[in-house]
Length: 140
Image 1: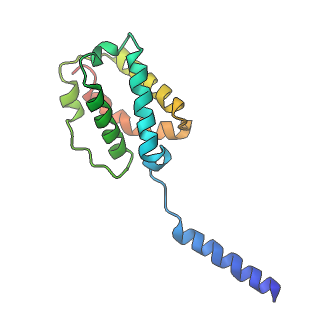
Image 2: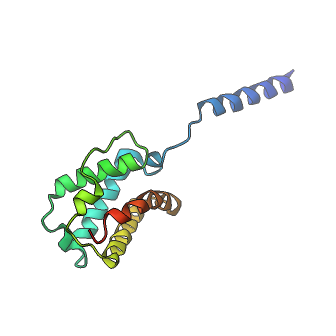
């Protein structure tokens, strides 16, 4: 009888675990709002200390930049946001960002994710979603 009860209990727990398990979004894996905010904060700090790319951001409204970047990352990572701000083409038009500087900024983003304790696997998932935006950013 005890064995039967144990088997029934184990089966019901495993079934209820399956029913309640939802696939985590990339946004969840990034740490949700707090995680995305950490990434953005570290990236802005990295940019502020970087002589190679800082000139692209020298005239930017930092508060607005942080808000819109977090909003965009939330949307692109399947978070509860719907980014309706300016497109990447609109934002980068006339900036003439070269490939070297673009790649350097990606390195700064990777460092920001590392500082925010984002695993390499999750970093790569986010970067894969950002890659298609490259064509809208460089040499515009």
